[in-house]
Every structure is written in C-alpha cells, then in structure tokens.
Length: 419
Image 1: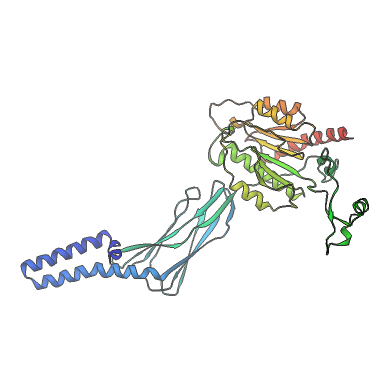
Image 2: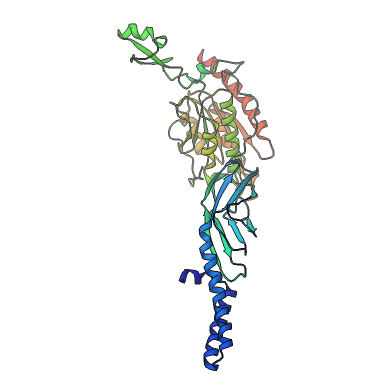
C-alpha cells in the first residue's frame, strides 16, 4: 500500500487530502452526505494508484538496433517493440529511452491505448558524431491511470551496445615494392635482416598431411618433419598511431586526433584488402589489432579497436625499441618534437622501409600553441624515412598517394642496398 501511495501525482495527493478534510468536517458537523462524498473522493485516487501499480506486471519491451556498428556521422535506426501481456490503464503509457548526448536527444513516446496481447512498434534515429562504444537505454515506461491521479515508472528494456567506428575513406595505390604488382618483391624487402627460415617445421604427428613433409629438414634431423607455415607474416606491415592527447589540437569530431584515427583506419583496411597482414600499435607499444602469429584478421577487429581507443596523456614520444619490430612501418604522428624524431630514427637504423605522416596540428585549431613539423620531418628524412606533412584541407587519399610515391623511391633505394 505504501508503494502504491508513493505513485500518487500532485493531483492525486490533493484529491486525497481534500477527501480526508471532508471526512473530518463530516464528523464534526455530523453530515452523512458529506461523509459519502469524502469516502468517494478518498477512494478515487487509491483505486487509481492500485490500478496503475498492478498493471506494471503486464508490460514487456525489446529494443533492436538495426546497425549496431555504425560509422561516425552516419545514421542508424532503433526499433522498440512494446508488448502488453496484461491490462494497462487507458490513461496511456509514456516511454523514454536513455540515449547519450553524443548520439542525440532522448526520444519520448506516448502510447494512448495498448490492447492486451498486442504489440506496438516504435522507432527513432541515431546519428552519432563521435566514435566510441556507447550504451543505449534503459527504456523506462511511465504508466498513468485514466484520471492522471497516479503514475508508476518501470524499466522495460535493458541497455543495448552501439559501436561507433571511425569513418573510413577510400584510398588508392600502394608504395612500390609491396609485393602487389610492379616493383620489388615485398617478401624479400620485408624480411631483410630478420634471419628467419622460409618455413617453420615441427615433428610429424599422426594425422598430418604427408604433402606438408619438409624433406630437407627430415634429412638433416633424421626424423620426419612437417611444414607449419611458409613465409610467416608475408607482406606484414605495422601501422603506428600516435594517440597522445597533448600532441593533438582541436576537440570533438573535428580534432586532429579523430582525423588521425580515421586515416589510420583507412590505411589499415586498404592494406588488408590488398592482401597485407596489418599490425596496429600505439605510440606506447600497445597492440590494438594483429599479432605476428596471426594468420589474418577481419576489418572489424581494427575498427572495433579504434572505436574503443582511449586518449593517452603522455606528453613526450619515446620509442625505446623499434615499434615495427623489424617489419615495414607506417606511422601517423601528431606533434612530434625533434627529440622524439631522433630517437625514432635511431631505433629504425637499417630496417625495412619506414613511412610517416606528420600532422600540422596547428591547422586543426586556432590555439596559440606554436608547432612546426618541418624539423621532425627533416630528421626523419635524413634517416631514410619517407615523410608527408598532412593538413586538414588536403584529402586523405591525396596524402596517401604522396606517401606511396615517396615510399616507392624509398623502396627502390633499399632494394639496391640489399643487392
């Protein structure tokens, strides 16, 4: 009873108070007619509260996100299905779904009549502007009685997950010598200096295919050996993303960091589509997607990893060891100072081809924080890197085309050095 009374609206409470006052007056004045009116006035909000409270068990709902993985800036639809398994008051049902502000405003619906065992379908649009992993919900329903004397709120559906992935731009072309047509063979270039055999072998186990027997190793070890993998990590490329917050400018979807993440996603998917295995790492050596032991991964792994990527608060870039681990490296940097560039160049001496995109981050903001990428670019070029400086008024495909052209020259130079 106490729970039912807690659901009384202001109108219901006033009516209940008026009924109690009328009952007291009827007792003082000995007016039976007034007492009958008082009983009716008191009973009306109590019955309304009881009706609204007991009807809560007769509702269920289901939420369906049509596209649970949506690129930033595009639109997806959410469908709500409301089922009435019992009777609800004819006063109506007010629905409100919890939507984060980054996905839009909170939608509200009013269902005036919902018959028993019937289903009502409702829908609304989401247009996320920022990448990330968001939760939509919970869906709450507010039930009122026909006179608006009582209302109760109930959670009808739990939260649903929506992954907002970075925008992916279409890129064309590849650096020459990537093993994808003209140029030097990418497997030779990528494996230079590694000292790995062309095949990894192990002892024969019952059930192994005899066609995989590695006869050279069998003769050398005098026991049957089988080939596990030929040319591991063939065409493998490491893509490095600089996610340091202090190294970027701007806020929201127009910041230099979000632009860099979008370029990173575009490069990873483009390389993956042409047959390369891609390992995506951050500036602090955290692997987002791909490992050297992987036989491949889907685009969703890269996009989901970038969608949930958090900004680092590190101020300085410190390479320490080779971030490419001996393989070809494509790096996307924010504000890279001379110290970080010099350290990065030292870690990649006599390594396979190294390419870098340096963002002129001041072009993404009007903040008075001077930064000139030319010094870092000069240090990297002197160390044999191919470098392109990116600005927001230049398309990603044009930047990638310039990087491929510079990388082709770099690849031919390295091929002559290997020979």
